[in-house]
Image 1: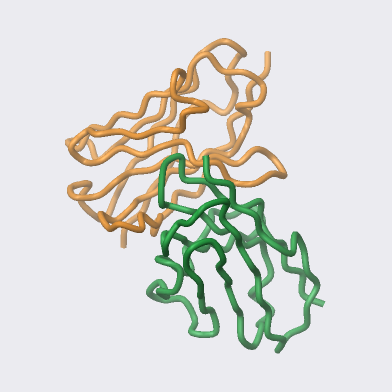
Image 2: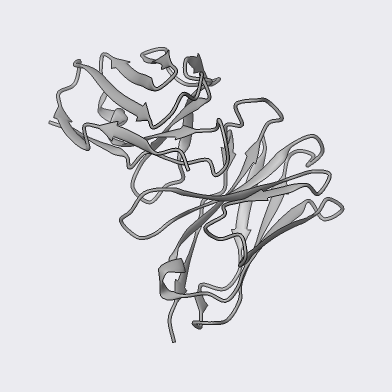
Length: 119
Length: 107
């Protein structure tokens, strides 16, 4: 059974860098896309972006200049960096697995991690 | 960006009811539409992909339909565990956008 787990600091100062890691267990990262989605408190879901196992990335233009998604298949991990952060980046951040099909559904999700941007 | 509009925003329903949630895209997205269920404090769960394909392990009372701009998620015979918020997401073009969500309360 594939499992994903987000990790990283729960509090980030404004203008600094949000760094999260997603660790994948129970399966290989090969041949899949790996995704980040966030959800501000009490609000809906926002797609951040994804990375293919070969390193190709695609991210939301609304965040594109601030976001970096990377992966390390040898560690079965992929990561999200967002900088500089603002208060509106406060959200629960989810990582997920996306099978290599046209319809790109997120079929496995992490439990999510709340990141608060505040001084 | 493609805008996704769900209706209703919320609905109170009874166990056993048939429930339909609709999702409209701002442009033709063929069948590039997925549905998720989310319960409070939990990650979303994939229900339907490609507009009408049932994800493995999801009860058959969930079904999806539609193509182009208009889509629907139907729950036939609502169960108590079906409360939560439902989201559609278009995956036709990036950025992949979600609807605003439909909150289902069980009476």
